[in-house]
Length: 311
Image (cartoon, rainbow, N blue to C red; front, side, top):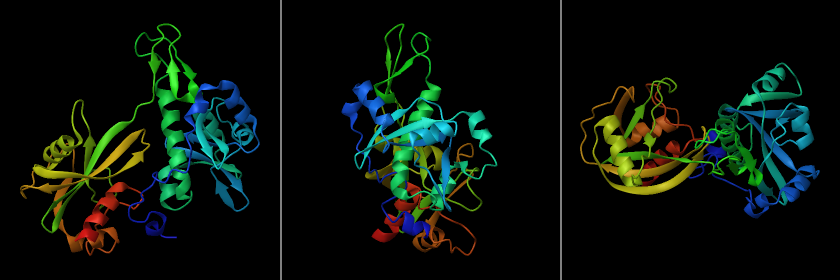
């Protein structure tokens, strides 16, 4: 199955969430303990940007029973993600040492998530649940101490809160908003590349929303800072949860007011205008110069694709 089949236009990774978060269950530890012990309960085990897989015949699967997860070295603490088809789903972490101990085994592996998902190694309808697990496990690993008084905090409400036993401050998971924009000027679109991108790849310009800033202002500021292009008429397209570690990509469209690009070399390696035909060839990996667009896994691909479709 091709990446275009896995992530058709308008459906990037992590957006097809089939989980009922069942938030009312987070407040009942006894019910969560009972759910953990239910044979139908499953878990995703994540480590940094990777996921634990178990061999099932010729295939590898990410959905594990709690006993399977613990048997492979997962940490015992669980995060309640919700219910899928009536069965409970939890997120779990695994230490660096336990992950390394699985190296070379035939029955299990800790595999980098993004590449696996791009290749169809995990069904797209499972990616949203994995994103939840990945974001939440990462948050707990980074926020074990109270930012107010420095005391070690404790997990509460099925993992959706940490509480300080000393000053009673409550800490909740955060999501960082990021704007990502398809900027057009007539029949051309603005794309840039960072040094870390694969050779020849260009994508939409993106950046974090700052404090007390609107989405529209963030689009205009980020695009101008990175490329020297002034924007207007910012409109919303769609969002994509992005668990690296926990962002929300806010897809937007905008119109450019000028064409003269001034690249901020601290942010971008290059930025340029591309015609519709060039953009189409880049998305389909047919550009004569070997240039490529973003993978269908990412919302940037869909921003460019919708712009091409509208033209």
